[in-house]
Image 1: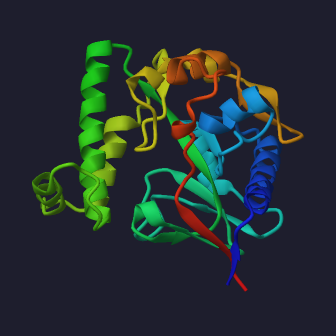
Image 2: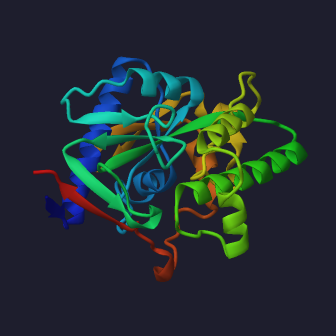
Length: 261
């Protein structure tokens, strides 16, 4: 395999995946939004944050479920990793990968997939703040238990807590079913959030009206989509998102990417 060492080459693979997602969603009336650091980059830099090396999308739950079920790659090089179908899948959200590549994430115990774009579902959340706090505490605990069962690396400060969680007599599949029943609401509320393990803290909850429609936004010289309430989302989640963070907080991800030969 040939290692991808140039960040611009890595980004070309990622934006190629994004182009396929955009084309499919546009053709099939599926809402998607540039989100997280990708959206900050679009607003502040008209492209990637200079030190960033991944792409993140949000989709409302109904659109997300349709997307992971129906996505077809125009080039034949991309496929969806659906957490409900992939065996030994490390995450609880979907990724669209370029199957011509191999990516090894060292921070997730050497987990290996292709170069990817993250796709996060956005779900309704209770409008009651006290109940919402309890929900976030429960989901945080369940995600910790799941992570301990998926990895031999101890992500907790306490070795005792790690082994207690790891040895609990509950399977990862059972945890995933508990999480889905707990987090995926059929009845609409006025509040939504990314409730996956990679989602923001409770401050990232936002009005449901923020994702009712899409707007165009420039990213790396092309027009893509984001949520109509993107400024409110960014303020709630990141605060002063237009100011560059200190140099020691400009963090890249820990992985190795390759072309499969």
